[in-house]
Length: 149
Image (tube, rainbow, N blue to C red):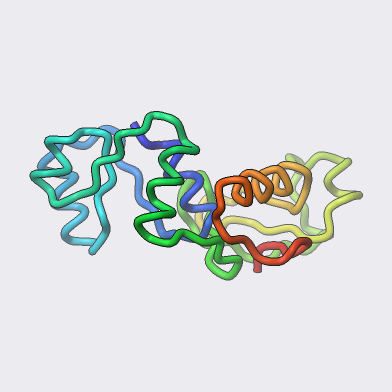
């Protein structure tokens, strides 16, 4: 129920697990064993697991709640793969995979690859839109023009 939020937390640099099909007792155990904070839209589960209940259903409102509670900020050195939570490593332009569009190959300055799933990332217009949305939400970002790692 918070899959989109998990992706955004990863983009901010937070090591974020997402378990969509786990039973409540398993979620509690996973959170306890890994030292994670359980975020949920299930009020009863949040109370049982000493987790955080996120009442808002819209991403921007969820991010606002977490910004206020945890002082969320973008950490360029910690940005993770939005898909699998893996670490990102710099990717040489000469080694770009075929899924990187020609326009991105020409326009982007920097490229990264997930060390776990292999997904490629670059500093294109999508990243600039993400930064703008974070700024609108009052979530601190690095100075304009900065890119991951």
